[in-house]
Image 1 (cartoon, one colour):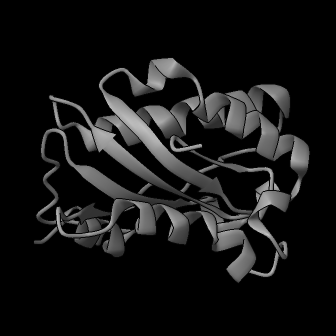
Image 2: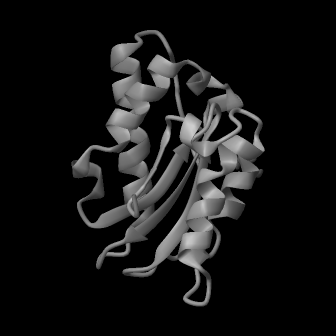
Length: 158
Protein backbone atom coordinates (compact mmCIF):
# COMPACT_ATOMS: atom_id res chain seq x y z
CA UNK A 1 0.00 0.00 0.00
CA UNK A 2 1.38 3.40 -1.01
CA UNK A 3 1.07 5.87 1.87
CA UNK A 4 2.91 8.79 0.32
CA UNK A 5 0.87 11.92 0.05
CA UNK A 6 0.99 14.16 -2.97
CA UNK A 7 3.02 17.32 -2.55
CA UNK A 8 0.52 20.10 -1.67
CA UNK A 9 2.78 22.53 -3.53
CA UNK A 10 4.01 20.59 -6.57
CA UNK A 11 5.40 23.71 -8.23
CA UNK A 12 7.78 24.29 -5.31
CA UNK A 13 9.70 21.09 -6.05
CA UNK A 14 10.10 22.20 -9.66
CA UNK A 15 11.56 25.50 -8.48
CA UNK A 16 14.10 23.67 -6.31
CA UNK A 17 15.07 21.03 -8.88
CA UNK A 18 18.63 21.60 -9.98
CA UNK A 19 18.99 24.75 -7.85
CA UNK A 20 22.61 25.47 -7.14
CA UNK A 21 23.88 28.83 -6.03
CA UNK A 22 27.44 29.61 -6.90
CA UNK A 23 29.80 31.71 -4.78
CA UNK A 24 30.02 35.40 -5.74
CA UNK A 25 27.34 35.14 -8.43
CA UNK A 26 24.42 37.54 -8.87
CA UNK A 27 20.84 36.25 -8.89
CA UNK A 28 17.57 37.88 -9.91
CA UNK A 29 15.18 36.68 -7.19
CA UNK A 30 11.40 36.89 -6.89
CA UNK A 31 9.11 35.77 -4.11
CA UNK A 32 5.42 36.40 -3.49
CA UNK A 33 3.15 37.05 -0.56
CA UNK A 34 1.12 34.15 0.78
CA UNK A 35 -1.93 33.78 -1.46
CA UNK A 36 -0.66 36.75 -3.52
CA UNK A 37 -2.38 39.05 -1.03
CA UNK A 38 -1.53 42.70 -1.83
CA UNK A 39 -0.35 43.34 1.74
CA UNK A 40 2.10 46.04 0.75
CA UNK A 41 -0.50 48.36 -0.72
CA UNK A 42 -0.56 49.54 2.88
CA UNK A 43 2.34 51.99 3.12
CA UNK A 44 2.95 51.33 6.82
CA UNK A 45 3.22 47.58 6.21
CA UNK A 46 5.52 48.19 3.26
CA UNK A 47 7.76 50.49 5.31
CA UNK A 48 8.02 47.89 8.09
CA UNK A 49 9.06 45.26 5.56
CA UNK A 50 11.58 47.60 3.91
CA UNK A 51 13.19 48.43 7.25
CA UNK A 52 13.55 44.74 8.03
CA UNK A 53 14.95 43.92 4.59
CA UNK A 54 17.62 46.58 5.04
CA UNK A 55 18.91 44.97 8.23
CA UNK A 56 22.62 44.33 7.61
CA UNK A 57 22.53 41.10 9.64
CA UNK A 58 20.59 39.45 6.80
CA UNK A 59 23.33 40.28 4.34
CA UNK A 60 26.29 38.86 6.26
CA UNK A 61 27.78 37.03 3.28
CA UNK A 62 25.67 38.52 0.48
CA UNK A 63 24.93 41.91 -0.99
CA UNK A 64 21.58 43.34 -2.01
CA UNK A 65 22.33 45.24 -5.21
CA UNK A 66 18.81 46.39 -6.13
CA UNK A 67 15.29 45.60 -4.97
CA UNK A 68 11.65 46.61 -5.24
CA UNK A 69 8.75 45.70 -2.97
CA UNK A 70 5.50 45.45 -4.89
CA UNK A 71 2.03 45.07 -3.31
CA UNK A 72 2.13 41.25 -3.56
CA UNK A 73 5.75 40.33 -4.32
CA UNK A 74 9.41 41.28 -4.04
CA UNK A 75 12.18 41.37 -6.66
CA UNK A 76 15.87 41.69 -5.92
CA UNK A 77 19.32 41.41 -7.39
CA UNK A 78 21.43 39.55 -4.85
CA UNK A 79 25.13 38.79 -5.05
CA UNK A 80 25.86 35.82 -2.82
CA UNK A 81 29.17 35.71 -1.00
CA UNK A 82 31.89 33.12 -0.78
CA UNK A 83 29.55 30.55 0.81
CA UNK A 84 27.15 30.78 -2.15
CA UNK A 85 24.12 30.21 0.08
CA UNK A 86 21.29 31.92 -1.79
CA UNK A 87 18.60 29.80 -0.09
CA UNK A 88 19.88 30.74 3.38
CA UNK A 89 19.97 34.41 2.45
CA UNK A 90 16.38 34.31 1.17
CA UNK A 91 15.28 32.40 4.27
CA UNK A 92 16.79 35.11 6.52
CA UNK A 93 15.28 37.86 4.38
CA UNK A 94 11.78 36.39 4.43
CA UNK A 95 11.87 35.42 8.13
CA UNK A 96 13.21 38.77 9.27
CA UNK A 97 10.79 40.83 7.20
CA UNK A 98 7.76 38.68 8.09
CA UNK A 99 8.68 38.77 11.78
CA UNK A 100 9.06 42.55 11.77
CA UNK A 101 5.80 43.10 9.91
CA UNK A 102 3.89 40.75 12.23
CA UNK A 103 5.46 42.39 15.31
CA UNK A 104 4.20 45.79 14.16
CA UNK A 105 0.87 44.45 12.87
CA UNK A 106 -0.22 41.58 15.14
CA UNK A 107 -2.80 39.20 13.73
CA UNK A 108 -1.60 39.68 10.15
CA UNK A 109 -0.86 35.99 9.65
CA UNK A 110 1.63 34.52 7.19
CA UNK A 111 3.34 37.09 5.00
CA UNK A 112 5.40 35.21 2.38
CA UNK A 113 4.70 32.11 0.32
CA UNK A 114 7.11 29.23 0.86
CA UNK A 115 9.15 29.21 -2.34
CA UNK A 116 11.12 31.68 -4.41
CA UNK A 117 12.24 31.92 -8.01
CA UNK A 118 15.79 32.76 -8.99
CA UNK A 119 17.73 33.20 -12.18
CA UNK A 120 21.49 33.53 -12.33
CA UNK A 121 22.65 36.72 -13.99
CA UNK A 122 25.27 35.57 -16.45
CA UNK A 123 28.53 37.43 -17.03
CA UNK A 124 27.35 38.56 -20.46
CA UNK A 125 24.15 40.04 -19.00
CA UNK A 126 24.10 43.75 -18.33
CA UNK A 127 23.73 44.06 -14.56
CA UNK A 128 22.62 47.70 -14.68
CA UNK A 129 20.00 46.86 -17.31
CA UNK A 130 18.68 44.10 -15.03
CA UNK A 131 18.53 46.59 -12.14
CA UNK A 132 16.69 49.16 -14.28
CA UNK A 133 14.21 46.51 -15.39
CA UNK A 134 13.64 45.48 -11.78
CA UNK A 135 13.06 48.97 -10.39
CA UNK A 136 10.75 49.93 -13.27
CA UNK A 137 8.28 47.28 -12.08
CA UNK A 138 5.99 49.82 -10.30
CA UNK A 139 5.80 51.93 -13.47
CA UNK A 140 4.96 48.91 -15.66
CA UNK A 141 2.33 47.85 -13.09
CA UNK A 142 0.70 51.29 -13.30
CA UNK A 143 1.33 52.12 -9.63
CA UNK A 144 3.22 55.34 -10.48
CA UNK A 145 4.16 57.32 -13.57
CA UNK A 146 7.80 57.72 -12.56
CA UNK A 147 9.88 55.35 -10.47
CA UNK A 148 11.07 58.23 -8.29
CA UNK A 149 7.47 58.51 -7.07
CA UNK A 150 7.50 54.93 -5.73
CA UNK A 151 9.07 54.75 -2.24
CA UNK A 152 9.69 51.00 -1.88
CA UNK A 153 12.87 50.31 -3.84
CA UNK A 154 16.58 50.95 -3.75
CA UNK A 155 19.80 50.19 -5.63
CA UNK A 156 23.42 50.25 -4.55
CA UNK A 157 24.34 52.48 -7.48
CA UNK A 158 22.46 55.49 -6.11
